[in-house]
Image 1 (spheres, rainbow, N blue to C red):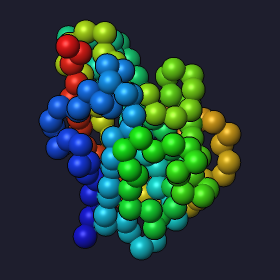
Image 2: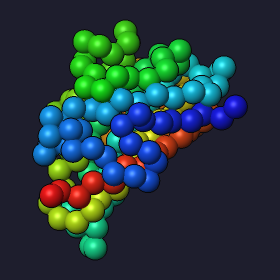
Image 3: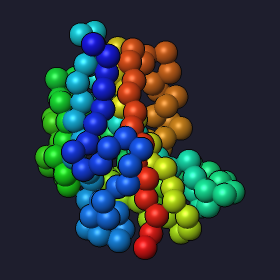
Length: 157
C-alpha cells in the first residue's frame, strides 16, 4: 500500500470550498491519509500555490501551511485544526504571510492550484524553530521514504 492523501472537502483536481479560503472562514480543510510506511518516523505537510501571483505569469510559489514532526500514527486532521488540536510533537513552520498556521487560498487573479503534499520521513527532524519552506525542505533532504499529494483549485468570486 502506498501513501495516499485525501480530503472530504474536495476531490483531487477539484474546487476548494470557499469556507477554506480568505473569502470564507479561512479554516484548514479536513485531510486524511493512509499507507504510511512502517519505517516512517515522522510526517511533513506542505501546502503551497505555484501560480502566484497570476497563473498566466507565475512569479513564485506561495506557501500556505507548513507542519513537521507529525507523528506517523496520525491519520489526518479535522477541518479547522488549531495548534492545540495537533498531535503532540507536531511543529509549525512559517507561511508566506510570515506567521505559523494555515492561511487559505486568496488569489489576486485567476484560478490557482493549491498543492497539498504529505511526506513520510525516516527521522524525526530536529527542532527547526519556525522554519520557512526552504529550511524545512533542506532538513528533509535524503529522508523522504514516501510522498503523496493532491491539488485543489480556487478562483475568487
